[in-house]
Length: 155
Image 1 (cartoon, rainbow, N blue to C red):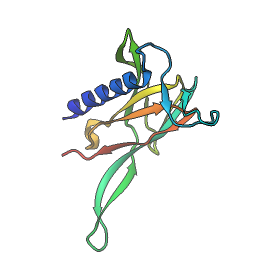
Image 2 (tube, rainbow, N blue to C red):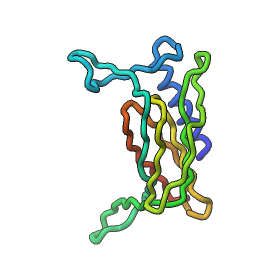
Image 3 (cartoon, helix red, strand yellow):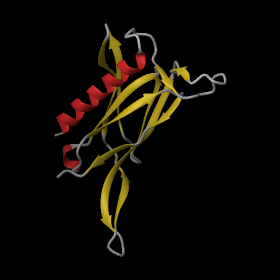
Image 4 (tube, one colour):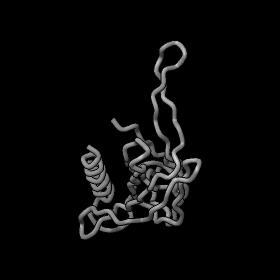
């Protein structure tokens, strides 16, 4: 199941790149949305440098006082993170390794000095943690991007 989710994420990310690039060339992708451009201009080019940070959280379902279910978000340390940059290579969407890191004691992680664009961040908790891995799609269209990553209990 994890492999299927990862493959679907990679396919979705590649499709997003293809859809945003328009002409299939390797020029920077434009996305909708105003980001300080001139009035009426609804597109911008990804920044040259992006700093990506966030936390890794485990989602746990708990029963609150009167029987209602709630979710708790618990920071998880020691989760291996792999960041893949989605790029077009000869008109084909591919992923290139952009970096690896491990979440710290408070679950925090950081990747600095990335080129703007589209990424997928994969989370790999240790086998003994009891959590399944996950991934998140990351449109890095601003100089500072915060993406929290969530993992679920196995089973």
